[in-house]
Length: 259
Image (cartoon, rainbow, N blue to C red; front, top):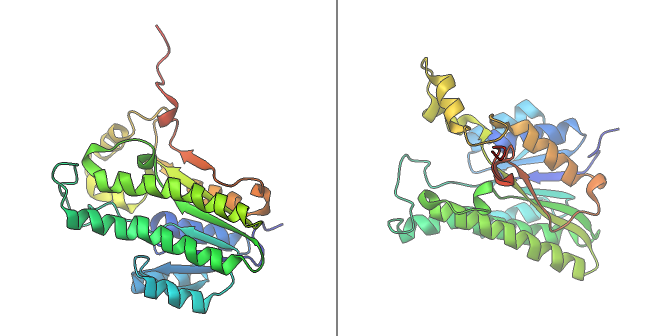
């Protein structure tokens, strides 16, 4: 039995990485997937390979969300996955002392505003049926401070908290519209490749990046996608306002045994 049979699911930032893995997993579970992305070339290519629909979406644009609302006025699932770190164009100063206001706004426009606009759209698209699942992609960085990525950490913390506000609001209205946040840590996607390279020390670099993780490995995009399938399915019908971490035990505490 497919867990998402005929559910209309919209996924933002679906062209690559975690977003693409979510689209693939949803399609495998029988969903009618709408893959959205600001990158139209890669988005259409991914959608063709998966066998789903594609819609261009800049999540920071209210006009783009209004267009999506007209195209898909009724949905069962929204995954607010699209996000940026602020380091897409290379190294930059993102600590609390040196990050520029423009860079702060750029990160929050995509991560915070994009999630807010997505949640607002989803509520409108789900409230007639009174049912649905909103999944907001936060991060381990939304639960702890990240001195070198202050804007990113603050935006992911905002997503965590807004998810709870949305969950409570929908429950107050008497709707079974659930909203939960997902908090991945080091998930292996192409974004890590520039740091790893393809030299003989690649394995050593990978090990160093997860040295503090109790499970001593990267997570996979498919593992994140599997959690999103669960949160989208009827099996998680009693879960709302929750935050779920996929961090290999990183936030559990020290992996060392007491002496």
